[in-house]
Amino acid sequence: MQKEQRDNILGRLGPEEWTQYRGLIRQVSSERKASSSAQFTAREVLEPRKEGLSDNLKSAVDAVIARDEMGPAVGETPPDFSLKRIGTDEMVRLSSFSGKRPVGLIFGSYT
Image (cartoon, rainbow, N blue to C red; front, side):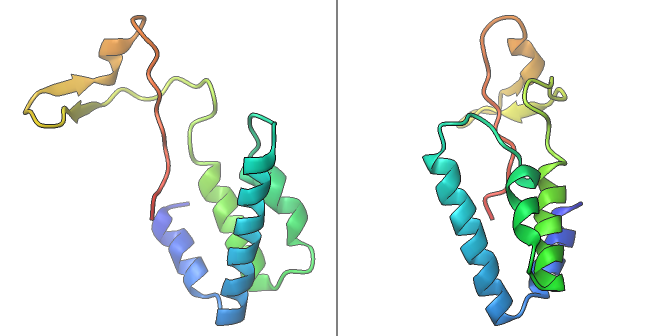
């Protein structure tokens, strides 16, 4: 699911549903921060909480789960790509670090 698709689904939530949705996400976020567990997926956390939600809220939760499952799995080799170094015109390829040192990649949306 693309971000635009997810955003369209979230855009259909009414004010009360939006408040419920934000509360659910805050609750999950708080639990994740308090957890000593290293990893868990959106499906593991959100799927059990869909009981009793409106159809619109269930669709929103499903959209979040689908978007979460699009990303790479932990330990999966990412596709090679190039990025411009900050402050220069030099380009750096991810593959240039292979076998040399660990590289942390963060995939996500900050919107």
